[in-house]
Length: 131
Image (cartoon, rainbow, N blue to C red; front, side, top):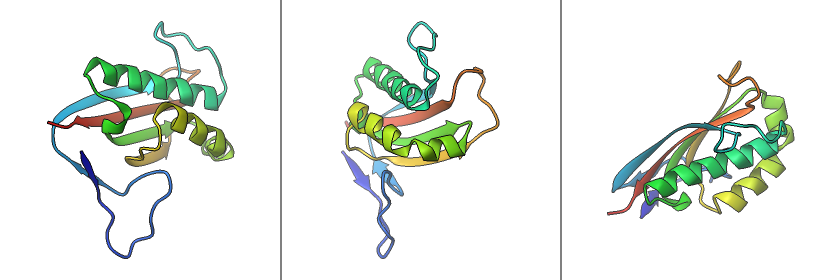
């Protein structure tokens, strides 16, 4: 399906891949935030919003016939780096419960704000469905 790109001699990353090579049909998931399908926030807790954001990504992927293991890259945007770091354990648990133990190439970035004031996280993803 996908090939993890791990240069020889590099330390193995934890929770992400340095790169992934894949062939197949590409699926682009626009930035998802931690609100439900009716555009309503059910929580202001970062871990809860992270879980909902991941569930939203999985729902969009499903519309294309893709599954979480087809994700090749994700970009995570947070409004508070300190809050993100303080909640790594809970975010990691939510990730494993929703996505599983599939770790694509990832980037995490602190931003000044997101378009929705209550949003604490936004994630964009790309998946490749094997041919």
